[in-house]
Length: 548
Image 1 (tube, rainbow, N blue to C red):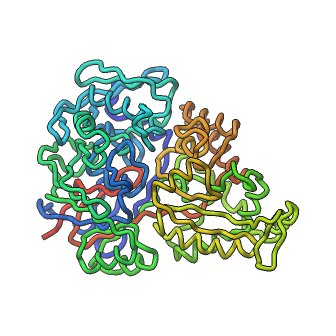
Image 2: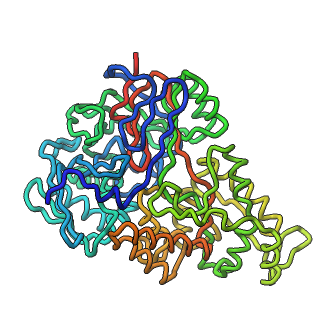
Image 3: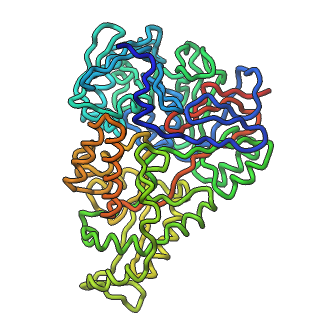
């Protein structure tokens, strides 16, 4: 049966993205819906919008299939379109595909494509392009990132005719339609990939409402509207080209600078507003503020289980028992974010609230474990064993994004109370990646945005896309098995039960230590209207315009 709207995803992914619009005249909506910022009136086309981005595009990569860094993904939504769009109620509706069918065994998806879509280089978007993209993600030579996890047990793509394509999986893959709505499975131009080769990430070509005009490494990226664009998703506020003539994204890592350039109107939009500035901006009628709980694996600490002494679960328990995460989160985020108890964010499908308040700081327990395992407290206040100090080397490459290093700094003081030394080692991204893959560290930390709990397979399974090099360094057959069962199961209640076991097992074995639930925020000057959000909660500028 042909379906132009599939409600299967609503049952499987029954979560809600809460977008809370705050300040003077802000209208709000949910997640991917076409809610707008500020007053509403007839859009005025034209002009340039400048966005102060919290982050830098890693390696200047704007390749949909290789990007794994959140700031990069936020920017790419303007370049790349998807087969389908996911709505706030988690129904799936048309975008580049007009309709689709799912085979009875759940292993194949046949998509009927729009016939009027072109890439920015003028080449056609068709079934051959879809096949090229999915095969490219699967090809090990691509070194795909999140996109590889999001195609799961992908097997092949068949070109039925010019605008009909059949995507085959080795097994049922429950998250696929939701994943197909994400920018990580957006479509790159086959012609451009072949033309630019290794330089494609700096010369991206998609079908989106904006196309690349200029990329200045480590500084900014400039887009201009695609004048031919006339294939917006089903939930868009209009059809035809974007209202804005130009969208410029400036990389502004430093949070106080992002706020100051917004307040001085050097930019019109800034994201990830620091907690101390949120209240002031919400109260100021000259600005609009929108916030969303990002659906993701929360920012978590991962002790290297393949390295002594952290291969002992008791040592990991001692480390966690030394931390007062709740107090640290309140201190740093001033009530704008709350403590995380599970790897999954609270509004994710299958989130397990029974984990809340199941562990807490227990300095006596930490000291008892460390004493029992032979780690002696020294005169300098740190423990040692066989002449080696109990030092945890935390490697990092993202700096103080979302105040993460500020949070780690509080953990340093808390761990010192039980004699554990925590050191921050800041590294260039290349060096960081090399050391992480080789396992040359004690602790790493990170988050991973995704609308489906299958993302846990990438982070904790040896059968996931990165195998034994998963960020948790987990090598647990039971966990591997459950995570495989999770993406195979199509019954939502059975699937939820599987991921409940997974979350409880991860916490029980201290395979990760979740810290805070991230509230993504976007602030804009009051003249900016029409900013919307995609799924799982990134800003979309297609409907945006500037009130004269």
